[in-house]
Length: 334
Image (cartoon, rainbow, N blue to C red; front, side, top):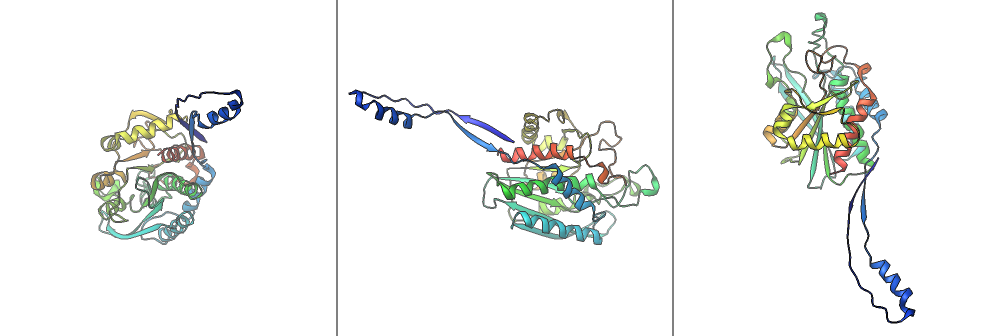
């Protein structure tokens, strides 16, 4: 996909002809000195939805990526190894955090940097862990069952892995940092109480208070969460509009320009406690959340949210393409 913008340069000049024998020479000089409209080509690499889907499938193949399990450890090594295929600048932030029930969780945040020395930077993020409880499953017997998290977690990671692959082959004009947050989805389940907002997004809370690299800053950030199910719709999430309305409008406008205005709606969405909140509140980096809004579901999330049916069957390549092309365009137009 290619996009163009133009700048017009106008030059006024005079040529005095003395003898006809000078015509040819003067005309050549005039042609060389005349400036016409110049177009700067912005070549946005083509987002490959099949590749993004493959990255999603590879994560799901490990089984539920629940902290403190062998599957979680194995998936973490996969993420680190894969990111290092695309950039040598990969940081691993190991940390521990206490869950709502007192369990000490072992977490890893992954930070992959592109154009490391560029001052202007864009932060892209998703969470890579999956929920230990299917506490919104219609069958109560499944409430203590861990989930694959194909959409809730793996879809955002899959999109960003594909963007990382693109940037390895064709660098954008800005610095980009891709962060995969851990321990996002270990929040208090419905069967344990009324809910505790602080028990969610533990990985982004840790990173915001302990930035890696030290002193990290970015011009803005985009968080992807639940972006791979069929018939995605994205509304303007409340906290995103509170902290970063100009970034919401930038992304939504770009989506419309490339044909996805019916998916990115200029309508108010709900309140979502997600990884973008610590980044906004602690680091003061304006960060937005692109998250599937589903008006007809009880939760306002996609229908299989926090159920055992959040598996690879719910992933739609068309949705991955919509989000991937939109975010890729935003980055390369910076």
